[in-house]
Length: 113
Image (cartoon, rainbow, N blue to C red; front, side, top):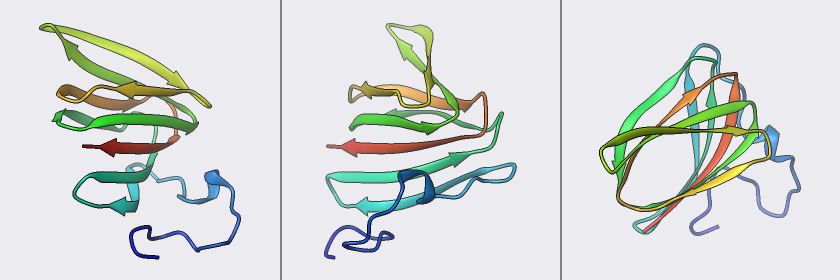
């Protein structure tokens, strides 16, 4: 495959099996990483986090299992939203946000310029 990697072509698999649970840390697996698109699977151990970072891309985060908090800044105010298994959220470009795992969790993230 030209752009997609780390997934076998024409081979059905369960989304939950693409990335293993991380033990006490955060793990990621890139599926596509181009100038305009970044698609990754993440695995978070409970209480692990990704610090807030300014994202120039539109983002979609889908929770495969567990529970994550998206911490973000909007109009100089700190806000958060909790995502549970099976839920997704779309985040606009130019948003400063981070992730906190309230449980062992897995997510599927798509960032598009």
